[in-house]
Structure formats: C-alpha cells, structure tokens
Image 1 (cartoon, rainbow, N blue to C red):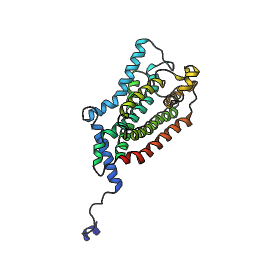
Image 2: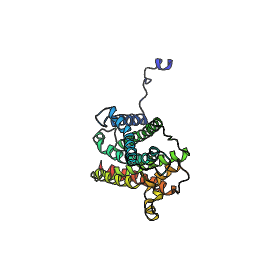
Image 3: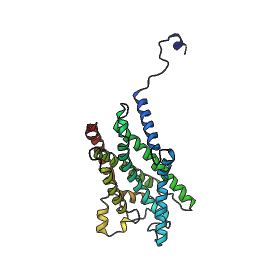
Image 4: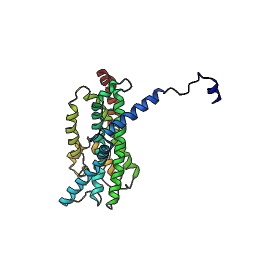
Length: 268
C-alpha cells in the first residue's frame, strides 16, 4: 500500500484479462438467455424448468387412465421418469443450442461477442436447467410417495450424463448445419419427435421382437435410456454398448467443433 501511495504511476486498478472479459461476456449471454424465455423475464425460465414435471404428469396420467402396468418396477412415475428424463435432456440441449445460436446472432455484431460464445452460453444454461429439472422431479416423486433413488447410483448418473454429452455434441452439429440452412431448425423438430417416440420411453425396448430390437439398438438414445434403467433394475436383460454411445458423443462433438471452425466462422 505504501509503495502504491509513493508512486502515483502505479496502476490502482488491474486491467481485465482476456479471461475476465470472456467470463463477463458468457455471464451476460447466460442472463440474457434466461430472461428471453417465455415472456422476457426470469419467471419464463422457471416454466422451462417446470416443463419436465408437466410432461411426466401427462404421461403418468395416460398410463393410469388406461390401466397400464409399468414393465419395470411397480411405480409408473419412476418408470416414465427413467425414460423421459434422459431423452428430454438430449432433446432439449441438442435443439436449444441451435435455437440460441439463431436467436443471439445479432449480438455477434459486438466485437466482444463471438458466435461460438452464444453456443457455449446456451449449453451451460441448458445443462443447469437439466439438473434443476431432475432435482425437481425427484422432489415431486418423493411427495407422491415414490422412491426415485436408483439401486446403482453411478450407473444411473453416468447414463444421464451421457445423454447430456450427446445433446451437446449433436447440438454443435446442428449449429453448423443451421448456419448454412436455417430451415434445419424446423426439420430437426420432426427428427427429435421421431426419436423420442421410438427410443423406448414408454416401453422396454429389450422386450420387443429381436428383429425390431436389433434396429432400435442403432439409436444411441435407446441405449442411453437402457443405461439409466439398468441403474434402477440391474436384472433387466439389457446389454449396453458403451463404446458405441461414447463413439456417438465424441464423433458428434468433433464434427460440431470442426464445423464451427470451418463452416460457422466462414459465415462471419
């Protein structure tokens, strides 16, 4: 302190580093992203987090109304949650990353904001939203007397993390595609709906005929859902090809980053 007082030329404030500026840009993009959902305030972001609960309630209501028994365990809420949560985590992240890139494109006219910054900010927001949604689902299940705690915690958590990682990888690929073909943002909705309906959210894929099950296993979402469900019932006749799932994650992320480098930046 004495040295600073004796030498007026000593800088009283440290100049922000590149990392400081980058973190400030990311935090500003994340806050703007949260406020831009459903009405332009933070309550709209709460709707985004609450949507998985509404989704689970609708599906369980349909099963109860039709008198369907869950093919795994005794609680239909837990069965639906083990399939819907990883599938929705992948679907939301892979889709919202692309939407965030398109929505926040005008911000890239500021020299501090790069297009990839909008992608990273949306990824971080969606990952946080996914975990908040899971915790909220667990609270709801506890309130209704269900037991959402898996018998193999590591197995269930690692499967859910794989769904998030695959969503990030496919999301970056979608960014590269929609930077050239913006209409892909609409076409991908049809892709995610098809994947969601055929991935085994409402049924156990392993109980399908072997000819159908063989082709379903090529869908990485099916394998991720089975991965999570193994954490709840290790006795299920399931064999997850972990190398295949990891291959999807790393290949999609690699392709997405290469497209960002050679396709997205070329559009700037």
